[in-house]
Length: 425
Image 1: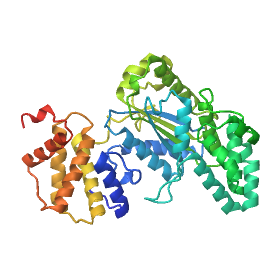
Image 2: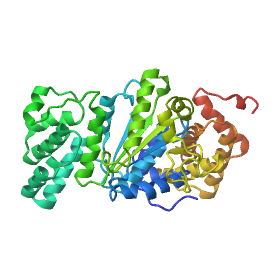
Image 3: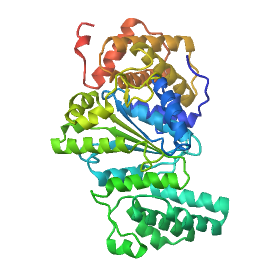
Image 4: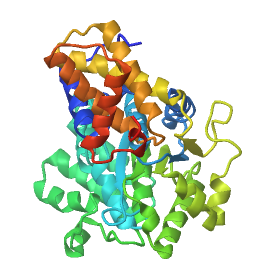
C-alpha cells in the first residue's frame, strides 16, 4: 500500500523528473521510492553503519552484484541515504574503463575527493560536496563551537598531528583548514587542488611542507590517509560506493589483475587501524564474480561464501541483488504504488486510489510476464510515469488486459527494442 510518509512537492518533482527522464535514482529522497531490498539495508545499518563511529576497527568491504538495469546504482543511493542519516561522509564513484578505472589510483583518489559528501541539512537541500568544502564546513563548525582561538589550537594540536600514512596529506589538510580560518586565499589556492587530486607544481607545495605528488605509487595511500583523517578529526566515518557504470570486463588482463589486486588489498585492510571507520561497497555485474574473480585465487578466497549476505549470514562479503525481498510482479507493483504517491504529491493530483492501484497491478503483471530481463524495472518506471501523466491530463481510465499489453508494448517500441514475445500478442 501507499505509505503515509510526508513528501514535499519540490522533492516529489525532483524524484519524478529523475526517474521519468532517465530511469535513474534521484539524488535525494530515494527512501520514498525504494522497495524490495529492505532486508539488505537493515543488515548494513545494524551491523555496519551504526558501528562505524563507535568502533574505528569496524571497517568492511561488500561486493554488490546485479545485472545492468537490475538496481545496483539504486541500491548504492539507498546506502548513501542511510549513511547520511547516521552522519557519515559518503562518496559515490562511477567507474568506467576510460574515465575512472579502478586500476588507476590517481583517478580513483581524485574521484573520491571530488565526490566526498557530508549529509545534507534537510531534503531537498544539496549536500556539501568535495573534500575541501567538507574541511571548510569543519572549520566553520569548530569556530562556531570553540571560538577562533581554540579552533586554531584544534587545527594545530589535533588536525596537524592526526595519525595518517601520508605526512603530506596531513600537512596539506591541516594547512588548508588553517588557511580557511585565517582567510588566506593564496594558500587555499595551492592546497585545494592538491587535496582534490589535481596536478600542482611541486615548487608551489614544497614551501607549505607538502613534498609528495599524487601519482600511481601514492594514490591509494592518499585514499587511506583521507579515511584516517576523517576518523582522526572526530567525524563519524566514511562510506565509499563504487559503481561499474560501464563494462570493465573489457579491460586487458593486466588491468583486470590490477583491479583484483586493489580489491584484495582493500579487503585485507578492512578491520585494521590503517583503514578506520570505513565501509566499501563495490558494485559489479554477476559475470565479474563468475568469470573474473576465479582468475585471482587470493581474491576469490576472500569473497566466496556458502551464502550471500542475509540475516543469518550478515558477515558474508557478497550482496546479491538478484535475491530481493519481493518477486517480480510484487516488486513492480510496489514500485508503482510508490510512484503513484510521488506523482500525486508532485502534481497536486488526486487520483482514484482504487482504480489507479488496479491499473498499477495490471501493468506490473503485464510487464513481468513479457520480459525475463531485470532491466524491465527501469522500463516499467518510465512507462508507468508516462501513463500517470496521461491519466492526470486526460480522462482517467481503468485498464483491461489488452490496453495494458498495448502500453507495455508501446514502451518497448519507444525504445526501439520491441521484444519477440510481443509478436504473438
